[in-house]
Length: 224
Image (cartoon, rainbow, N blue to C red; front, top):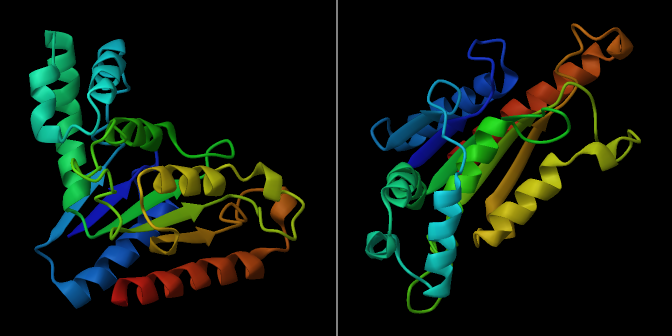
């Protein structure tokens, strides 16, 4: 299954990440079919931020060791905890069912959007993706295609690489879930605000090349 997640606050076609994730999804469906596909828009259907009841339930689950999601309700002790689990379980189930996940991630203030962070916080529930007997990750074979768009440039030759908090964060988070490093694909389109930021004038060709390279890589990844 392909799980397609958009997190851009811009719901229109002006969003570069939405255009790119849609490009990947179309290419994927051409190869794999249109039925085994799920789209989640974190802007039109936001994931609620965590509450104290979530963290309390999470700590209780951690003390029990590797508890599979099916056994979590037995550890729920209040209506507030039950509500948090009700909000969380569908997201965990959806991610567990996916063979490939494509994430649309615009850079907001050097990092990921709050809408995506809320989803990440919920699905990263203690033990949700750990095998109950071995503790090994159930997501070891899951592919994650992270599609990032940045208004400026943050590559190694820009002097701004240290301001890129998307890449290290996504690597750390996916690794924490047990997704293999070779299954995390970071696809970046840079200089996407070249049309509106005066300081980027003259870099139109570089922006177009970055976008074209991102599109081409997504087609290749969809076909893999």
